[in-house]
Amino acid sequence: MKLLTGKTALVTGAARGIGKAIALKLAQEGADVAFTDLVLSEATEQLEKELQACGVKAKGYASNAANFDDTQKVVSEIAKDFGRVDILVNNAGITKDGAVKRMTEEQWDAVIAVNLKSVFNFTKAIQPVMWKQAGGSIINMSSVVGVSGNANQANYAASKAGIIGLTKSVAKEFGVRGIRCNAIAPGFIETEMTAALPEEIRKSWIEKIPLRRGGTPADVAGVTVFLASDLSSYVSGQVINVCGAMNT
Image (cartoon, rainbow, N blue to C red; front, side):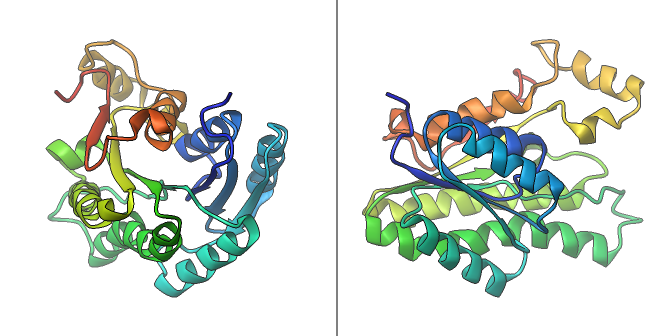
């Protein structure tokens, strides 16, 4: 028996990287998967096919996660198409790094909107669905940067720290209906974004990690499956660092 058979998951920002790995892992464990990205593209079409190849129902949706009304519409459409939503993974996110003294208002607002407001938007939209079901698991993608901060990433750190506060508050509010809410705080994960960094910077990061390697999207996806499944039925309001002991 697969861990998520009979459940439906919604994953935001799933076209690539960590989001894609999560969507695929959830499908491999038997969950039907709805996923969103800013626009439907060749990448989303390919993911849809890969998910369906796991023997589950899967569909991609275009959605601007930072837009409140757009989020309400897409969640309503997904709930109608799939009948229920048991798992919400708030993964959509961007970076616009820079020192505070040079950071523009646009850089600040864009990161807060996509990274933090989107989590509120989808949590707000999914609440009546999960409330009616009297159960569900919400998993928010934070970062070790949200736990400890990082120079030249004030906007990103603030957005990811905000997600932690939101997670803990939602866990306290929604628990009465059997709805759990947790956050994952990945560390240095090997993705397209980190692969673009200069080799000396990548090496300096890895030297700070006790496990002496960068994490993989699959490492994050494995923890997501745990939090999505009944294995974690009494885990709520928590932040799990997936960082190879970099941030302890």
